[in-house]
Length: 141
Image 1: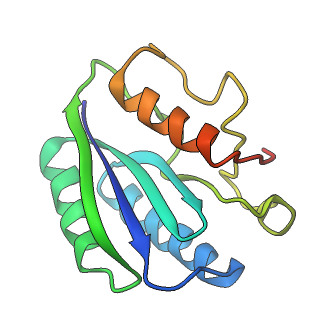
Image 2 (image 1 turned 30 degrees about the vertical axis):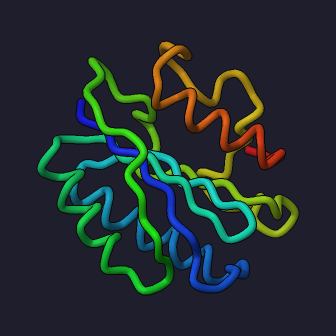
């Protein structure tokens, strides 16, 4: 399973409505391409992991690069894993405003041990955990 993790900067700080729109668009697009992953957002910074076939991930990432809501996209890591890290999530999502977004499907708590299944020693999981920890993200399922 191919994966890609990137980081980007929001052009403007996102409110609840904008984040909900991104999540809805991501889920629809990802389901169409059999992509799973997670999107983390904190104070204008996005960190996203995408996984699927390499061609599908590259196609989705190409569309993300054209999205005018963010800039300064940097691919942090790509690679292959035997299994999906996020098999049940067309796009899990977290932000630092749990009160407003806790009812969204896929809203997760990155501090819970069960969030990142599989080998926690992988570079991809390490990047996601570091982002969540350093931004002190707290959420609800």
